[in-house]
Image (cartoon, rainbow over the protein chains, first blue to last red):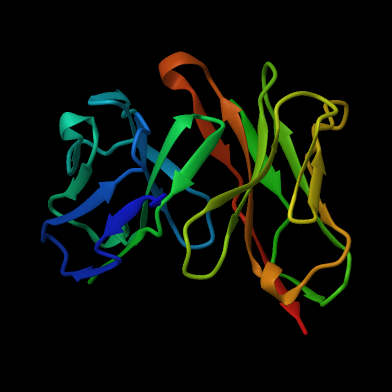
Length: 112
Length: 114
């Protein structure tokens, strides 16, 4: 069974540029999460989807971040414009329940 | 709100040494508790879990017991291997319904030397 797929694995951009991350969850997993992980810290939930619906986006900085999950499968997380403080690893996870989340390898974003 | 506190790393051990990584929590209600592991270059993966008091989660030689009286969920392994070198995260469930989520510790880095 294929795991959670994320792309790109690495992204380097200049500040004020836009950037997008893509995630393909495990087949059949209705719940999809986007996390941000700063160096030396645990993951911080940005948004959680149940199928197409964003059920928890309370931690998503909506002035510059947006996300979508069309058709309840793949998801895209976008930052526009990026700031220096957005440098982090962006993790996508999927699950059948909150008790076990399956993570992708993450996208390491560097904003210069 | 719910929170998790892990011992700070890095932890450096020799192969076959005994490992303990401390995790304590603050929570309302009866959360489920987890240990996730992140190997170099890989995504986080669930190592073990416990869903109620006195439950013991175990996997790959690792164990952790849900201690409600001490609000702890310490990770232990009797004999570590080089391949156990990774970052270990303690987490717990918080909230319910649309607000349910995992609350994460900061992670503890483990390096095992041959």
